[in-house]
Length: 152
Image (cartoon, rainbow, N blue to C red; front, side, top):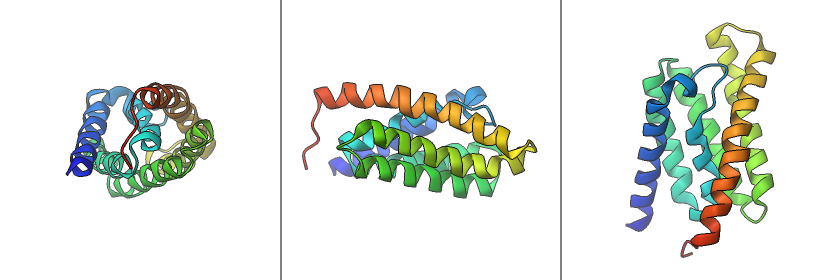
């Protein structure tokens, strides 16, 4: 029951954060601050993986880029949070890997949807993801992990 509640809570947090911060959460130059939740999979485990994945589905349905964004954006969050979870003994590496996954997958299709050069899309996604996941997410992960240990 705790794991289901935790996954639902992270899904809601993710979706609400993206929608409330919509002006910076969508597009080529996005800083999706909700992605700072991805590294918390290193602390709370698979419920965060499920939560940020479901939250991404909800947020991308709202975002207006269509089924490609819903499908591949969700895949990006699923892979990024799962890889971070698997690299939980190396938090900085987990954050960097998650950043690269989101940047490459989302940047790899968003340029087509928006109509800009692929390099612009990849760079824009990388800068935003690095800010959200590797900087803010790493700091959040370190703070939370120093105060809470998820029962295994």
